[in-house]
Length: 388
Length: 227
Image 1 (cartoon, each protein chain N blue to C red):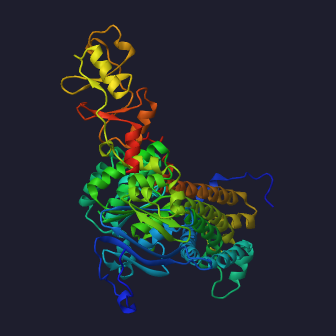
Image 2 (cartoon, each protein chain N blue to C red; image 1 turned 30 degrees about the vertical axis):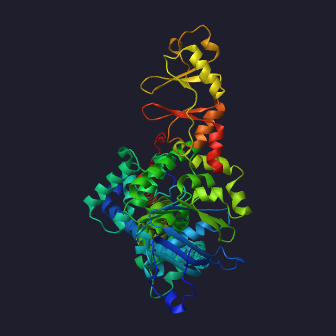
């Protein structure tokens, strides 16, 4: 970050930020010192959150990530420093107006148990005094956006599953269409299968709504999956590193960050990369019309004991092994076996690796959406991608 | 003493005194409703103070506890000795209200404390002002505990109003006092039975009120499957 050096005290106290730039939120020397605590919970934290990005705050417990989040909507008052929201010092805004302009999603959804799901979603529009018709239309729209069954709108939250409650929590946060969303460990209370689905939904939702999102999580894998940028905090609210997940995994600045990312950084990077980013080899391929001798020649060239069978339209039929060729005139006379690992250009390299290590042929076959053969991926190809 | 050969209840007397009995019942009801109403208003105010400034809760509950501990008869007698009170409705109300305070204060504070912290934080984060959160989130969620307090306070007050008959405040207690004075069991039985009936009816009324006000608390539908 390139801060203007030595800002004069008068300038620092001005309610508008001189250079807002692309950051929707900028934390400037943000500090929280609780009375009686020896060390600050958050210490002079500088962090820019670019407009339309999802930034994850991660770190061990006691790193002040939740405190930092809550200073953005003033649920926690900073003892030092400034939060700039779209170039405005948030202290100059009435606190209720500020909060109604920031979506807030908390752990276990935190729904109002005494209000029906529709009323929960309508909370902020009702506070803001929207006309009833507009509120109702917005609630229906949001239920659709977060993929919530409209029949549930008339129920009380206690009748909903954890995953459904969390969807309502997101709909409620989005109700007044705030540009900024704060999410505090939103998926910590749901089981892993539901969590993965909710995470996928959030990614799809973010594609559509393009909010500036600050997400607090203790789960580095969740951060890697969801975030455009990850800020890793050390105990005491000290920023260790902020970077894209790719850069963070490739170049952790120190031992602390490397440890926090875990000892499977390479594998985690594979989870961020897609098959289309990797080098795909042509692989041993024959047409159904090829003779057994031609097939054997291809195997010899590629040092394999199998060949892929691809028909005239380029579609993958399967593979045949060397042993099966004995006594067959043409490859097409044989019933080809199916590849265990068939991947698409959008598949993650981590999934491709899993396919490779569990398949008999030790490759993942790449096909496009029409199942046309693109080539094969080997462990070597993947390693090439990670070390590149 | 009541004569041994006299019947417990003389229906003749009852039919000759229906107007008086109705008046007494009506007085009993108004004494109770006014006492619980004023007590609730005071207790709610005190509870809001106790929740906002936590250190005040101990002293407030302490004072309410002392009032609660004074024997009813002694308090009525004590108040009657002051010229500005004397016998009657006002004296009875002062005593009755003071008995409701402890029960109501405790239940309102307990109810407000039982609101989940996550719910309160969500409300703050959504931008509720303090008073609006209290009105729209905290108090509705505390309603079951608050109504439980109102039920106890009301049933207790119906019983105490009977004692208030001794300070000529009206109510069914006056029937009992009359019966005791004349060694005549009929008004005693009528007064006692009606005050019990009144307590039961008011208790059921609060149950109904709770049922109407807290539909969310009785929802125990099977949870929907994960979708």
